[in-house]
Image 1 (tube, rainbow, N blue to C red):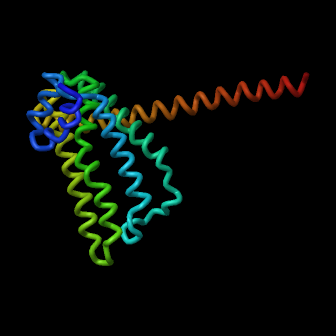
Image 2: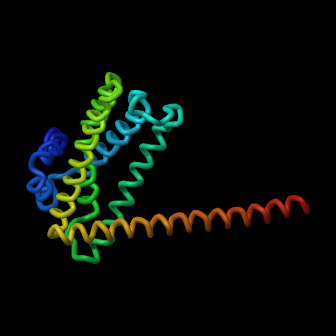
Length: 207
């Protein structure tokens, strides 16, 4: 595939999700770089929406929004979800590879990438009582994303609908376990650091 075809392929998946994700898995038509770029664009549009949405629909103080932190958090969430799904599907005979899962997540985000900025602009002209249009637009994009993600996970792993839902439940449980282990590890490292710091301080005071 040429670079132009790789960039346009997510738009093909929007209208042909089953065929599109099948070719991602079996004909190498996906691109992890394009998927990660879409994740970045989603993080950017999400943060811009929180910062610049009209005051009628925005309950957040824009000054508290840290775009860099939000984009990094979204990248970490995508990687954690992919790792959790990959670890679960390895045990349940899933055929999808880690890079396929990343590609599915990134491509599935396209509806929200295309919607959040127009929704933000729309919110500037939204009056009281008309917020439903703004929220409906966002809801449609989120539902579209969820459907694409479900079809993508189902297709690349060659699962049925029921098994896909079951593995997604296990994925969220696995995700929580990974977060718990990471937080435990960070806490342990912090305690070890504080221990050696106290020893160093004690030695300095005694010398």
